[in-house]
Length: 220
Image 1: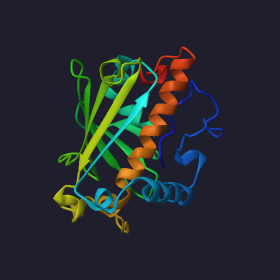
Image 2: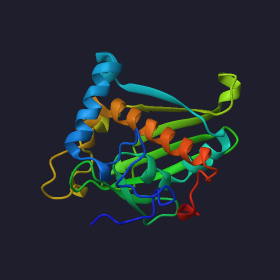
Image 3: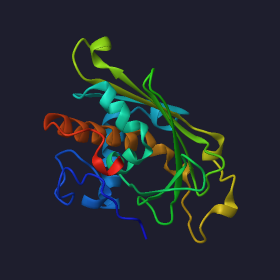
Image 4: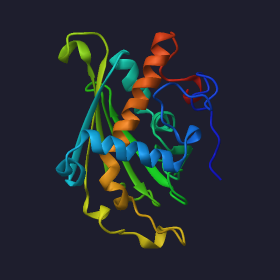
């Protein structure tokens, strides 16, 4: 069973989400799939979808340092991703495990490596096991004054198709009966993470407008 958490408890009833927020609790797998397909059709070229790299960015009307501090904690993913939930400490310091509700029996492991000077946050992840975190998302938070000439933040995220996307290198860790593999989702990865970056924007701007800390109390 996924672990219940206090994610977004400072905002209120998550059954009545913020406009533009896409989370599994207020939607369904079928609706999420439809949103991702529509995003792909309208935004991405065939090469961008099926190539070996994607890069996305979003402007956020909130201070860059506050955005960075929030993202540096992996538990922030429980708030702004579509379906990563139930974060709990794993068997190594700084390593977390979670449930991905986008499919059955998907249990990712996540570690963040953050550099406060450069405001970079690297998420190192894998399905089913935490020894080889081969899925990597490189994020950077930039002061928007520097690049856009206005207050706020720009968040950039990059990821690459790894050879392990094409075959599961650790089949003995896969739950019995599960047929889906993370590589099966690569064609919609850029769309999924674009939707999630918009979630990040919606949540951060909501908190900032209302004087709420971007890093909520439940993560303290």
